[in-house]
Length: 97
Image (cartoon, rainbow, N blue to C red; front, side, top):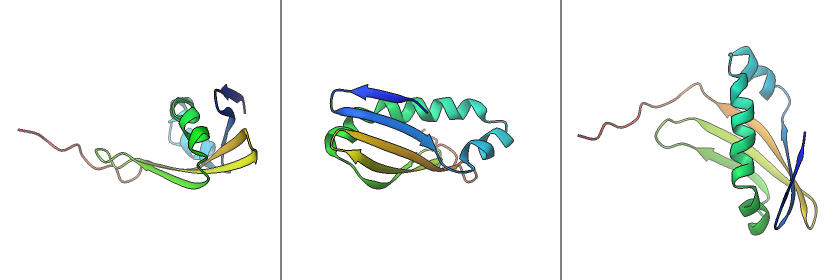
């Protein structure tokens, strides 16, 4: 677990119980780093907007989703818990003709 400093505060990303293990069991250990980088990429916006509670990100093209839970430790420090990564029901990309 590492803390990243942003303009609007500090953010830690923590994978919930079983999430890492599930991804690794599927041979998706590279997804762990990708998910961490994804959350970090919009971390400053999360801090700036003071987001809190459950956040569901679903890719409309693929159907892959990530469930996060953002909790504040102080006015300028938050933790994002990665609670679920759903790779089971991806939808095929729409074909544009």
